[in-house]
Amino acid sequence: MEIDVLNKKIQNFQKNAGNLNEKNKFKASTYMADLTEKDGQLKKARMEVLKYEEEMKKLSVMKTKLITEREAICNDMKLMEGQIAESQATLDGQKRLIFNLTSHAKNKAAPSLATT
Image (cartoon, rainbow, N blue to C red; front, side, top):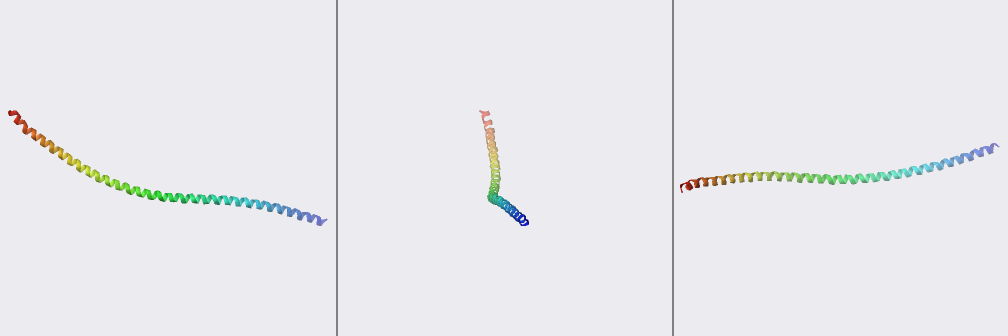
């Protein structure tokens, strides 16, 4: 009788151990699936980071190029402003000269008109 009780205990223990083993296998496979999924997400995130880093490098180069072009354009504009100022001064001088010549010619012509 004691042997039967011990045999039943052994069978129950083996049955419980089998159930526990199955539960552990299921948990392990679930954890592995989760780890595999998270690993895939991590790889995808790393690829995105690398892509964005490459894009940032390109944008940085483009920004530097645009800054250089802007500085060159600003320098050209300053030169043009100086040239425009010179041209304006020349034009103003020529206007004064023409005005002086025309007013002087009128003054000379006025007395001769008065005598006739």
